[in-house]
Every structure is written in structure tokens, then in C-alpha cells.
Image (cartoon, rainbow, N blue to C red; front, side, top):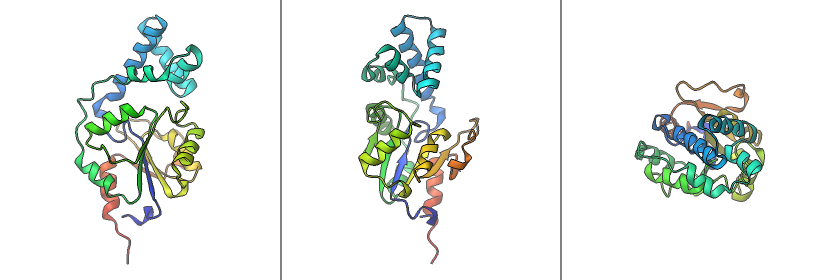
Length: 224
């Protein structure tokens, strides 16, 4: 194990675009399902629905937050609808599983999605049973990352000592609260993605592939 991570006893992973690659195009499907929900619920056109989807996401952190606040939408039915997507482009990742399994300490998921969807993704990726817990949007009281309240809730509920925890995430802005709490932060940057948008001070390590990164840190042993 890379000595830079010898103090880590809790490994926290985002789900979407972190534990699978962007080529699977899952999030584009989710965005379209969100817009369709907005369109159906508000009885409006497709273009307006996409505009509202984006506007609520910018204002509330998730479209769900805006729908709950402004229209009283029930979150469980909404999440069932928007996560009814085709996951067939995802494939088992045995090497990723082996690398995560070999990490010393606890392994957790911290996601703005809900647990049933997360479990579907983990099952298809061959990662079921690997993580101790999935801390999802419901357990955040629907206050999504990067709301600092949800990071505190994660640590308090699961007994995490933030300076001994590491967080792997593809959205750079979601690393800001984690770093402020003392976590080691890993940004998964994808090809064609914008830069870290002024969040460099909150990124300890920048990587492009989680499996490759884990392979490297496992190969580095503490010097005698």
C-alpha cells in the first residue's frame, strides 16, 4: 500500500461515473427520465421540462429538491421513475472488485442517488456485498452533495473519523466539504470534462481511472 494512504481506515466512494466509466451513458438516460417526469408531472412541453430540470438542479442541488420544495413531489416514486434506465452497457469489473476488496478498513458508498438504484449498479458491476453501507439521498434528508450537512450526517451516523477517511468522487465541487472536514480527496477526471473549476485546493490527487489508481497504490509498499 502506498504510504501516503497508510493512515486511511475508511474508503468512501461516489457511485455514478466513479465506479463505472462515462461511456456507459447512464447519466444521460437519468437526465432524460428526470425531464420526462417534470414534463408529465407539470403537464408542460419537453423543452420547458428540460429547462426546469436544469434550473432546479442549479438552485437546489438536485431537480428533486426543487420538485419537493415547489411542487410537493414524493421522493421515493420520483427516484423509482428516474432510475428506471437501461444498465445493459455496464459490465462486471472483477479487477476493480479485487482492488477495492484489498483495501484495509471500511468501504462505503456516498451517493446522491438512492440505495435501490445503487444496489442495481453494484450488482451489474459485480461489486455487490463489497461495501459496508450505502449512504444515499434519503439518509441525507434530501440535502445532496455538496451540502456540508450531509457530510456531517455521514460521519456522525457511521462513526467516521474524517482525517482518517478518503473520498473518491468525479465531481470536483463535491470534494470541497470533504476536504474541509479533513478527508483525503481523490478527483476522478474524465476525458473531455471541465477542469476542477477553482477547487484545486480541495483536491489531493487527480486520477482518470479508479481501477488503475488502486492498482498503483497497492503496488507501492512502505520502504523498510
